[in-house]
Image: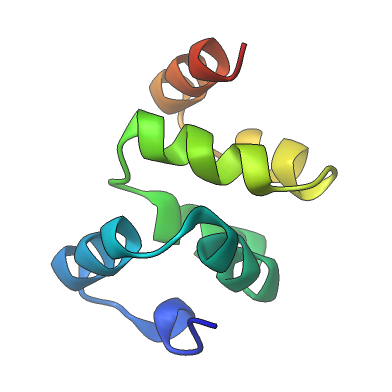
Length: 82
């Protein structure tokens, strides 16, 4: 598990870590984070990578996070998930 992932505050390091981890591992970290921190963790992640992560999320977590992302990210993500 990614115990330290939710504690990383350096955006560049966080982006690197997220790109190296499997979606289910990221989902586990997101489930342990507050919704606000989860959205912050996902900031800067590519839309296709976000789609992988969101496919692994269960509702209501998926719906909750989707509602907190910015409009452009949400739109791109919805297209990839359909």
